[in-house]
Image 1 (cartoon, rainbow, N blue to C red):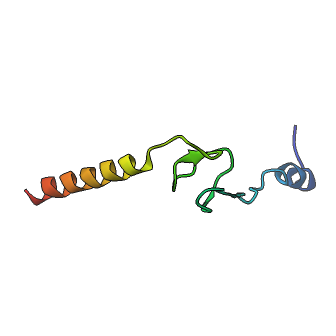
Image 2: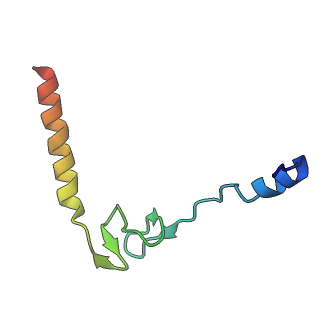
Amino acid sequence: MRHNRSHRGNVRSHHGLSDVRFSACPDCGKKHLPHTVCENCGKYRTRPVLDVHSKITKREKKAKDKAKAEAR
């Protein structure tokens, strides 16, 4: 069915994006998305879930290997 201008506007009024809401981590205080693991300390609801230090070392090693490969 055809939608006139006013009806089209009413339909599209529900397509707007809402603001992202953040939660503060109780351990480190950094903001993160709700119901997700804190990327700063690796905890979810005060329980450690991720080993953040190993992820950082892995990322640094990968960057170093890439730099070596580009230097050749």
